[in-house]
Image (cartoon, rainbow, N blue to C red; front, side, top):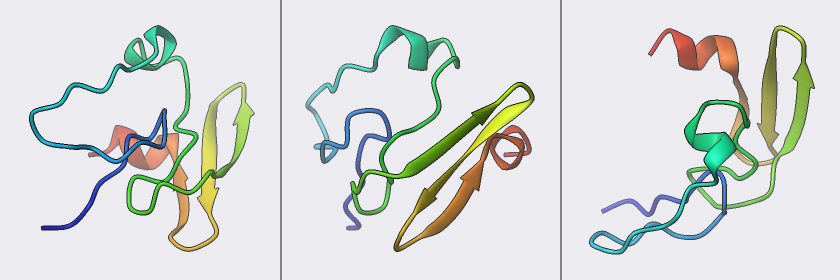
Length: 69
């Protein structure tokens, strides 16, 4: 099983344990700050039409990509 991390807190996700999500993130107003794959802090740039976040190990994630999922 692959480890996953909370993109807003950076904490490892443990099945069965709740990890609080900040209110702004739950409303979709806050971009992720941590990589879901490794938990590292990402470089984040916010613009009027979206955001992008870059992990040094796993590359770039942007709001436009997430909208198409």
